[in-house]
Each structure stands twice: as structure tokens, then as C-alpha cells.
Length: 127
Length: 387
Image (cartoon, rainbow over all chains, first blue to last red):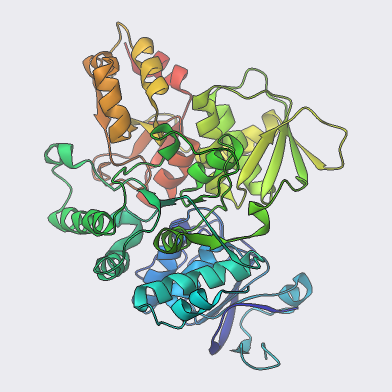
């Protein structure tokens, strides 16, 4: 079952990683580019993507990174995780970025680069 | 999550924009942790104080909300980027950093927080009674509170702890309820582990564990090693609690931490065989650690710059007890209100590599400050880098 953590609507291309994300250490909030080479989305930009990743890890200040990405115009338009964590949930809540938690089956079925539409008020949340 | 009438009104904005924002955050974190309601908390510890970590967007956000926001419960705060008492000794720090850092400091003080600027609130205050609900961001402090302090907190985020400070509430998530089964036991296989080994164990446990782990094969070590364990664990994952146990015949999944596992983590974090400078701290040192250090330094001097981070409260106590005398005679620089992680005090134009015994420090020195790291235990630092 898809669970809504932060409400909202979004449409964009999926950027998917299999690495849990430490927002503070791994993403440059001034550019939106992943600058930690241990990630399989190294050098990719999260800007305007539907960012799909297992869950957040590490520093509690990562919530500020998410908010900074939004203020700087480099944020994802939505985030989809397999497991909810407080850093990502609270960062998305303040930055007004829709955020969902999906089942492992759904997570695995999401393809990188595909267009995705999200509407948390609709019966089909993900299209 | 069910809200009371009053909470719902606050969420709808009837009590102003700041509380609306706070309840929006609590609602999202409540959904994220399957909470059915909000409960009162007694103490919030906030992260997001260093200008290097929260940037312009964070500085502006805090300046804006601090115009009318006031904390409702005891609130303490994490380190800043610098020690303003020693700022004149660090010429490379630009005016913009200083101005923005002061603005952030002043915003928190306006909101009524206690100006602790420390990642080790447990070294400054007596902890409340067992099972008290608190809300600690700063991962090492949350893990310490749950594992060694008998308190209950999620591994909060900067915003969820701030929302808790402003409302006095936090979602009643599963983790805050009575003891649940811990699904994993890490078997410590290293003999005579020092604080660096415990830091590496923590980093490993954070990677493989979910929200809590058992640790078997070793009894509770000294405070320095306990803090290193908390710091390492908080850096690498979502784990918010550990428990030392000798029970091996339960149903939990068993994972070994031996030489091989340790070396793998060590090689990931150690990128240099020497450091241009030394930093001690992350977490900041406590009074006992400063006492130990002053004993270890008797008759010795550092052969390179050594920054030693502790909270202002601990530094004042250490001065009264004269622990600082031997450390400063040996060339150690005692700094407060800041710590190794993301401090601009380390001048990257002059410093290529840093020696530290902190696993947490190593991760952020490498990934955020952008210097190489020479990771070794305190006793080895004293042996190799003092004369």
C-alpha cells in the first residue's frame, strides 16, 4: 500500500538510486548534484526529478539540505522511499515536497528515467 | 494520526504561521513513524546550528521564525561552526561566515534555547528520570539517550526536534513505546577494543542495523568508547539504540564484527597515513576525557597543531579543576561551541589531511570538509604525535 507522508501533486522523470541517501554529506544544495562517488547516481542532479531511493540516513541536519535545495530551486519535485525516516519526512514537510512510502514490490517496479505523475488526493496516487 | 481539536486548529493556521509549520512537520513525522497521536516531551535537543550545515536558506528560515517563536520546553542546541572567543586566531574565516553564524546563534537565543552549543548535552546536564520522553536531533545524543541514558527519543531530524521544542510534543511512534524485540545481534569479535574500534563497530552497526541492535561479546566500555560508539552509529544509518547483552540463544539475526569487517570500514574512512593537524572530538570531549588527556600528556608536547573540542560548560569545569593546564602546556588548543564536523576552523588551503580518533569526524572531514583522514586511536596519537 502506498502511504502519503507529505501531500501534494507532481509530474516529472524518475531518478532512482539503490543507495540510502545522506543528504548533508552527499548532495550539494547549491547545485542539486550528487557529489559523493559512492552513490550510483554520482554526478546526477536531483533537480526537478521524482527522486526514488530506499530511505534517508545519517545527519539530522539533512532536513535543512532538503529545504535549502528547495529555496535554491534545485529540489526534487517529489520523493518516493521504501522506508520513511524523520529527516526526509520533515525536510519534505517544510519544503512542501510531496513524499510517499511504497511497498518493496512497488519500489522495485519503478523504472529510472520514466515519467511519473503523483497526486496524493487522487485514488491512484501514482501514475 | 489523530490530532486533538487544538492541534488541528494549530495545523490549520489559527495560531499563526510558525506553529502551523511546526504541526505540519509533526504530522509528516507522525505518519512516517506510524504514530497514532502526539505526546508531551520534556526536553528537545536541536541540530542545525552551524552555518556550514544549514546555509543561507537555514539562516533566513531561523531569522524569520525567531521573530515570534518561543520554545515551550527545555531546549538545548548543537555546536556552531566556530568558537567566537578564539575567532581572531583563525584569519582564513571570512566575514560572511562570522556574520551568518552570529545571526543563527542569535535566532536560537531569541527563541529561548539554552546556549549550550554542544553535541553532548548528556555531559552537561543531569538526565531526567528513566523512560522520560525527549526529542533529540544530533544522532550521537539520541543514541546515547536511548541506549545509556534510559530516555526515549526517535533519532529526530533538525526540523522534527525544532517542531517538538516549539510545541512541547512529539509523535508517539513505535520506538517511543515499551521495549520491542531487537531484531539483530552484532557479535563483537575484537579483543581489547579501544575507542576507535568502538567507533568502527558503531559505523558498522549503523549500516547493517535497522532501528536498534544488540551487541554481544563485550561489556559496556568506558565513557570515551561509549561516545565513540554512539557517534559512529549515528553517522552511517538509521539505528537509534543499542543494548549490550550476553543472550545469544534468542531469535535475533546474528552478525559478526571481527577483524575483516573492521578493516573494511577502516579502509573506507582512513585515506592517509599521516595528518597535518590533529582534532580530538566528535562527540565533544567530556570532563573525564579531558582529565584522562591531561594525564596522558604529562611531560609530553604535541608535534603538530591539535584542536580539542569540548562544550563551554565542560571547558569551564575543566579550568576550575586545572585539567586544562597540562593540555595547553602540551600545545593543545581547547575550543568550545564548535566541533570537528564541518567546522571552518580547519583551513583547507593549508590542511590536506587530519589525524583523528573519531569515526564520525572522519566521515565528515572526508565527505564535507574535503580533506584526507588519518584515523588512529588516542593512545596511538599520543605515542606517535607527541614527544
